[in-house]
Length: 86
Image (cartoon, rainbow, N blue to C red):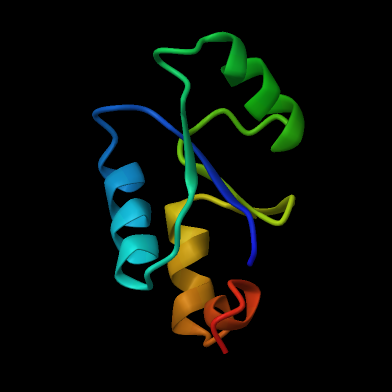
């Protein structure tokens, strides 16, 4: 099973969209709230090559990017393979 991590914040509509897509696929993910754990924001910045917006999504330590990037993978038929669902 793949490891999916998402850095997010509570009132982020893009985070909600990404969580919804992953949940629809039945994928469990670790959510890291950068608002309640501010030290994790620096971790996110390092892992995401300086990207500071949320969500920042990682699949098996591969940096996918944000919600739009996740949706593009789905649209291109690549997401299921990355998630081990294909």
